[in-house]
Amino acid sequence: MRLYLAALSLFATALSGHAQQPIVAIPITEPVTAAESVCLIDATTGQVIYEKNADQKRAVASTQKLMTAILVAEAGNLDEKIAVKHTDGQVPPRNIWITQGSYYTRKKLLEVMLVRSYNDVTKCLARDHSGSSDQFATAMRAKATALGMTNSHFLNPHGLTVEGQYSTARDMAVLARVAWANPTIRQFVGTKQTTFTYHGGKTVKVDNSNELLKRYPECVGMKTGYTQAAGRCLVGAATRGNKTVIAVLLGSTEEAIWDDAESALRWGLDR
Image 1 (tube, helix red, strand yellow):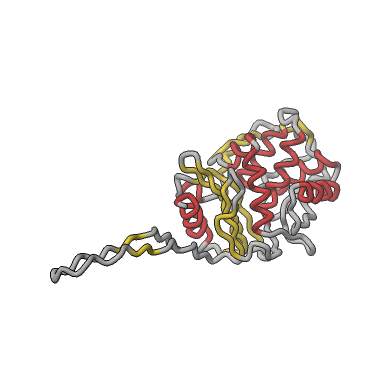
Image 2 (cartoon, rainbow, N blue to C red):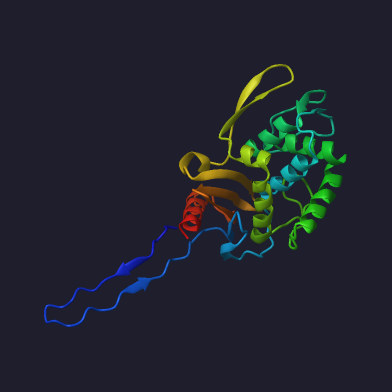
């Protein structure tokens, strides 16, 4: 997809003295994306700028970690250290390998979950919040209802495929706008790189999985996602001056996701 700007065609006055032709406005071309579902909104007003199959129920992969982040951030006490339990465990395909008996602040776990989408960290946060992943999923569904996400049904905190779990591009745009309004989440989703220090003292660098942060200067976050069932998914945000737009792209491809997201965000900011 490429962004086309509105142009004005002027016709020169003929040498014969004929009157000048009127100015013709060429309309702005809407974005074209490989994603199956798209919803582009103004982050301040919530106005939908562009949509494509926005109410189609789909798997949304790790983009639903934005819901996990909202519940954890709103519960507070982020500087408190919590213990990793054996029930947290590793959840393929992506883990940072926290182990039973280690302690980390909720804030640090929340940060690395949003930056790199670690599933063991996500499961730990969910269990700490609600007692278990299943109970946390109940809290996710209750929050979705409260936010008016009428076409979403969450069954786990991390977004890995399970029958009966789904959302839509429109609902995810609602969720993303709420996440963006939270200062802690807003900071973490825009973090390009952070460090994680294990309980034993080893430190590793954690790079953001959102490639748009590296290639598109106006990008300020938010969350990537991928499963075979969901395809490539991205919730992206971009800011220019006082304007921020959020684009949700679901069911895209590895080849198209970054170009499509950048083009959609640029198009939204140009409106």
